[in-house]
Length: 353
Image (cartoon, rainbow, N blue to C red):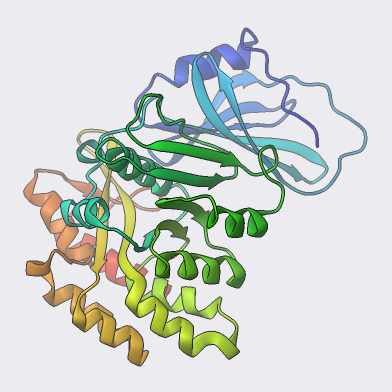
């Protein structure tokens, strides 16, 4: 693995320091011999500052994830090789874990998480939609109010939980604290955890361990790269081997407490992004639908479940409009009217299916 060599006082290091204080800046792209580029409110911008770094003749193929501190800010770093050249993507992380209200975590979702004694909580959305921030915010909010043991498995560790919490937080980084994710996750069940943060569920083994942990009295928080609640349930079950699918489907119906899907939109007037959500909670209708496998009816539950705390993206964006936000969708297209915004969301939902 070739480590990123970035001196804090270099031109690029100082430029990143300056840009990191600007609102709406999220990602930096570094390629030796090329100008620095970065994302502002989801749009790629090229800077004049050239990134200089010595280049090896041979590069090992593949990607690698890590974390780094620069000028008092923390970054998640992803390394890649592109056409024989190294490139790094630096995700700027907040200095502090935000309060749920400041990032618009829906009250029904937060309430369900704070009150849960067990069960599976899935936080879903595209890359860069704020899933990690939402999880950190919710977990810290709970850790401040309970005396529990929280174990997280992260690749890499992004948010550092503060010391002195009523809860004990064990943050484990893959590659430095643990090498085998599956073994570590199974071992965690013997380490008296109350809350287990898995990160992304990528395979059937992880999905089954998550279900086992949720079924045996643990609160399990995980992410999936899905865009709707119905898609999330189907994607989760597709990871399970066919010979154990029926039993896993029953377990999921009983253990699933929350699906929270989120997307980021852009308020053109304020020049900042804000989230909208789709919330699915555990009610009898939802449990029965999952057991029967009639997943398309989950959309109906979302449309009619407003009084139970559930709603879809259309309802969420109407709430944002009521708050005085003007929605231009970022970063693909700027859409300003209510009708056009609804049409866009409907198209995205159809695509995800």
